[in-house]
Length: 331
Image (cartoon, rainbow, N blue to C red; front, side, top):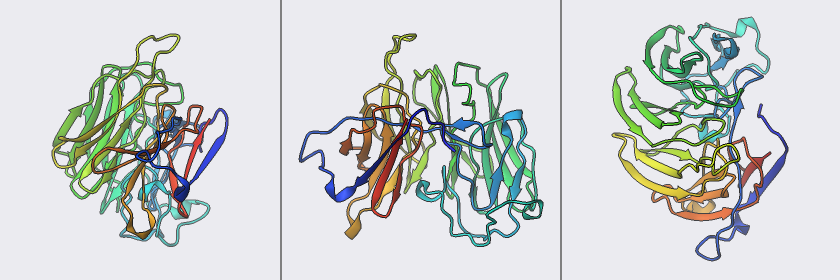
């Protein structure tokens, strides 16, 4: 479920797109909020894994259930699973959940809107303590639901949308690390932990200007971690403008691979996806933001391929690719 003030659906038929090198780039809009308990939208919290159901985090506990009939073997590595589609190859997932469908449940500390991610025999999820904004990264065993490890990071309470949380961004995971993002007005943090919970690297991406705080989720693409950072421009109650950019970092050590500057207009919550062109054409990273619309970015260099400026309001969803089309929404 998404939090929408008004609705506009944009569908891009890719062969008709004019690339930036052939014509001037357009301008436009879009972000991403989602929810985990039926009432609380977040920047990146929607999308259950093929094995998991999480709910009821608004009140500080989250029963997490492992589906007894779920197929093993497919990793669920990011917000909304494979390429953000929300689709799984798993068989036997019930269309309606009953008590017999749960293998285990676990109560998690704090609250948050993020979704779990899965790699092998481990489930990773984030949470936060509302009164202090202390951030929590947890690892659970998929077989039993027992907590394998927990890491806590001091933070501070700051202004956010009342439906946002201090643990909104869904982690991303690969065979070596789990990647977690969160922010305060002073600091946007991207953190990598090894699967055993030990520290791998941490990067400070600078201050954040956002009336609703942040919530966009990182993704892993090949050997890179990609994160969007579209911030607010000057507003009535805040004349300051944030510094917006897209960024790719080495998954191994957090070193910057590329950085693409962006206009600051309205904070975006949109988690990117990959467009796979026909005939093995070059891959494209797809982003939504109010300042740029739907953007196609070269995932290896950060260069802008094209932009389609049709999103004229705040978007609270992530782009999706299906049947050769790119779908983006705003409202």
